[in-house]
Amino acid sequence: MNIATQAAQIGLEWDTRTGAVTVPIYQTATFRHPGLGQSTGYDYSRSANPTRQALEDGMARLDGGVRGFAYSTGMAAITSLLFLFKSGDHLVVTEDLYGGTYRLFEQCLSRYGLTFTYVDSSDIEEVRKAIRPETRALFVESLTNPLLKVADIAALSALSKERGLLHIVDNTFLTPYLLRPLDLGADITLYSGTKYLSGHNDTLSGLVVVKEPALADKVYFHQNSIGAVLGPQDSWLTIRGIKTLSVRLDRQQENAQKIARWLTNHPLVKKVYYPGLEDHPGHELLKRQARGFGAMIAFEVTDPALVEPLLLKSSLISFAESLGGVESLITFPAVQTHADIEPEKRQRLGITDSLLRLSVGIENVDDLIADLAQAFSQEN
Ligand SMILES: *Cc1c(COP(=O)(O)O)cnc(C)c1O
Image 1 (cartoon, rainbow, N blue to C red):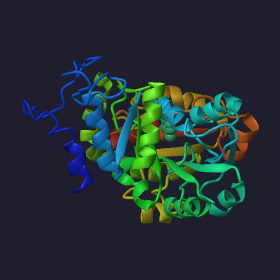
Image 2 (image 1 turned 30 degrees about the horizontal axis):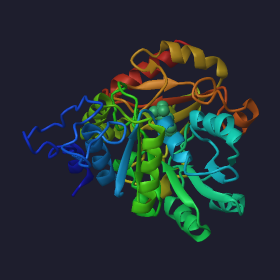
Image 3 (image 1 turned 45 degrees about the vertical axis):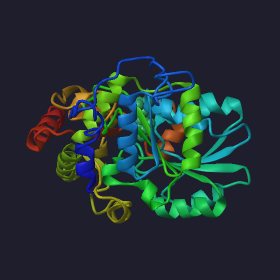
């Protein structure tokens, strides 16, 4: 069945008792036992909650895994997953990583004896060279943040299998609608559900999908032990978001393609990073492995002095963190999302003082372009 159909109907058959078309919000902490040693399958909502489970089961189907897991945020999902490892283990990680993940790894988990090597995960040889005897996993972003580099998921999965590593993919920027890493050999996918899956800038959530049952059991053990689960209300909001994922992303990508081309021709723009442009280094690869190019754009302006006026004079496009929602947002990665990366490293990665990031929403594209045009023109 097509993924757009699956997404639209997520949770539809959940409530067989009443036939409710949408999943009820089971706002309960605990469940009555039918008898001694008996359970309805639900005992306590940290362990399992029906609304959360409808989301988890739906995500597992959308992403082609055996089991899904929902957490309070994307960071909670990543933290829970990292409990699969122990002191002394080493992970090879995408270098232009989401800033919050980098902070978690370097400032929190490194204190517990985990070590990380950061590489350009679009370069398979660089990944291969970073693998050590104590390496246990490859942790990659399918489309990186903010420079939108593309990782070859099938090649990285083959390398992981050859070296006995877990292959974990943060697929937040593409979602299962555009890319299904588990089909290409990855072991675990993860999402900040806060972004495209919820899609309305109104909910925080994190999602994980696991390919194999034995690994899923371990992930469940940690989800339940750590307890950073998604509440029933936010599970419901995330389900509601997923129902419109395909139409939102179709429109967002169409808008992004037009805006990227417009930016390319603007005299005050030095460089545009959008994988939908033919000259983007990941264009061909993404065309092969995914169903689209996503709706995130990064661009460098000719002068750092343009940044502040652009952020403040865009009016339809809000100056705000986050991404993936129906409303377009603009951010300045060097001082916002990526502030926890050392300045020299940021420069080397290309996260410069003149780089801006756009999350393209579902508004009318001509309105968005007019907004950018006026924000630029007031500077001329
Ligand atoms: C936002 C984001 C996260 C963290 O998710 P939260 O829901 O904000 O905790 C992780 N990875 C990527 C790629 C993100 O964009």
